Length: 470
Ligand SMILES: Cc1cc2nc3c(=O)[nH]c(=O)nc-3n(C[C@H](O)[C@H](O)[C@H](O)COP(=O)(O)OP(=O)(O)OC[C@H]3O[C@@H](n4cnc5c(N)ncnc54)[C@H](O)[C@@H]3O)c2cc1C
Image (tube, rainbow, N blue to C red; front, top):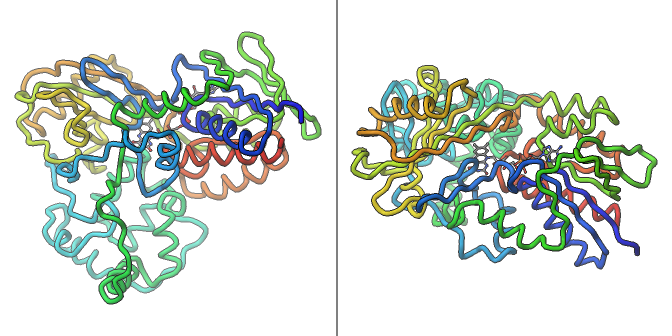
């Protein structure tokens, strides 16, 4: 068989995974394959950006990934990174909520939306009325849901307004950078959505599960496995290791794909670069953000472009701050805090990770590293932004003096919003893509925004492309 050529557009984790799995599958199946990976920025990894400075490991984008979804862990195992995985500090797994100007401890189980009764009754985040509403939700009748609903309306039914607005809203904003009134329950809470379809209500299902476990000793989720993990030298280590495994690929950095040319019958795809260079491919994987894929597809498929560009995105800024330990009098005995929507109006912050508590190797001995998360683009300089963030954090964490170092990363249109109806939109996109047999999509807007889902998307696109051309 003659050599086949796959071009992958976008060198974020979706594209890097697509390149890695393409070469791996080709080798397994004895297919002679050339892979070209093209990235327009001056670094590989897309949103994954790790800066190592003066003993600090600073993450500009994602700082960890969940272990409940297997694809990132599987890739790390394949790449020999298992021993490099860093779990969250077991002494710093508590999370706080900033509500009405004060930090409140999030009781056990709230992170996974399954509060235990002790935690529920002890918390000062909810009034007695709010607590009773959660506890009595076990009596709710079964409710039939249509195609989709917002996270807000879905969870308000089961947990009441207080729990939904003070606990769930900040948790969801911390992941998606968006509002529970717009996010789709079906896409962002697929397990709870399924449970609600099958059982009388969420609390009832949780009670039945607990009773079964007690009576029949059914296996419980491994509580020892950290819910989040990262890599010892930061997530950049995953990018660097992937690149080290892509020596056979043609890697083009600081090159932008400007046009794609194909039609349904053609046997090849023609890819034009910003320097006028042309590549001829048997298959192309678009692993860019949705809006960038829309621009490339617009000349050949207006419908597809319209669907992709209708996916809303929010912006993100991370501000990392380094202090001497003596400057921060708060014990930082947790992994950080999330901000309740009520308090988001008053300040810029959406969340703050106590990085050096959550992952101690991120800062040198005697230093504190904090990371603030903002979900709007603010037209002020980095210095002004740092000053604003310090102003908010100072009274909460009892900070004296100014930060010794700071790092600001601004990400425009970075977080796709899985709004109500997103599942139908993705179904339409997938259906339409069947028409373009040599084009494949991978990215964070399809079936999950997190790193494990992006790796799965890259891997699945590689499998489909190889199946087609092989
Ligand atoms: C601040 C922040 C914090 C986050 N925290 C977490 C977290 O802790 N855990 C987690 O799991 N997820 C987190 N996420 C989400 C996760 O990081 C992203 O969803 C994921 O990294 C996206 O990867 P990707 O490869 O799909 O897209 P990207 O990383 O956006 O990569 C796409 C690449 O395509 C390139 N490109 C676009 N157009 C072209 C073109 N025409 N030609 C060539 N190249 C092009 C872009 O330059 C870009 O590098 C976070 C995201 C942000 C922004």
